[in-house]
Length: 419
Image (cartoon, rainbow, N blue to C red; front, side, top):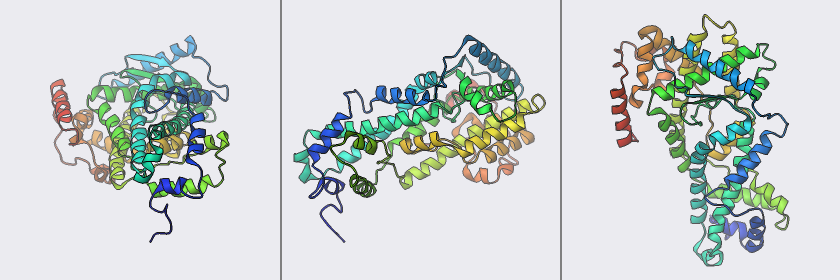
């Protein structure tokens, strides 16, 4: 049942009779944006992120002592891992990063993850301009894309700035953000994480180096995995479907208290998560699959590091629980970026996955555990995580891992990415 001219059309609801003057509103929005290339103003986003991550003054430059200490920790970690996995070291370039370093070194990957969301959002909004308004809007259609890009630049700056203030290593959120072979820890953030744990900073650093080195081994040893994870995130992002009715309701609610002549008020509106992204059923299904893969990665790292520290590091169990609690709790940084990408970047079933890998190793050995990564088709499913002790019970050990086998599986994945 229709209640008015704007019921089914968000743009009529925003700018119809009795609403704000569209030209005045767009003019004020334009004052908030500087010219930029691409779908999002990344220069502005990174500048905002750097300021946010150093707002507390706690982002000193990395010293040579920091660099040496981190390199030594990663070297020792790799040595310990030699006995716990069939995968060779994946660390080619060890590094100690400041928060600003993390932002710059991971920017290329973030661009590939965020830009599909911006493009999808822009197309959806432009596609919902009613025909009767198209002539009036005319050349402003392109500007609408810039408005969306400005909004996302603000949210990207906030989200990345918050993440930069929390991440402990390049692989900390489970997604391979840094270039292949680049292992890095953030000494300033590690010191903040270690405070209150009652554990020596050297032990905390070594434990986190073990996790970082284990991530590097897995992604280096499984050629298809890196792109598999990143493509899954991109596919999820590109499939964003904006709920126009929900947006209209929020716009009408918030516009009532916004003065279109006040640039500061409009800027607050753009950065308030006005276009928070609801998930379609297809996206929810895709997200569940992605969460399983992330849980399997983190669970494998958990299991391998647990084996490496079992007889060497008495405080490892305490540190393992601290890391698990931190991942389970999330925080403002992850929540902010979840709004932007529509993805919570932490596994929900880490303990189940860790139990599954440990059980498989105890029954069939290290090579059988690592051999499951030979193909996406061999990976455990959600049902397998429901019964982690029964995974591959009675099954034969997978074929030995060889370069030829990996090349064959990678070719299959490239030829049929949806398999």
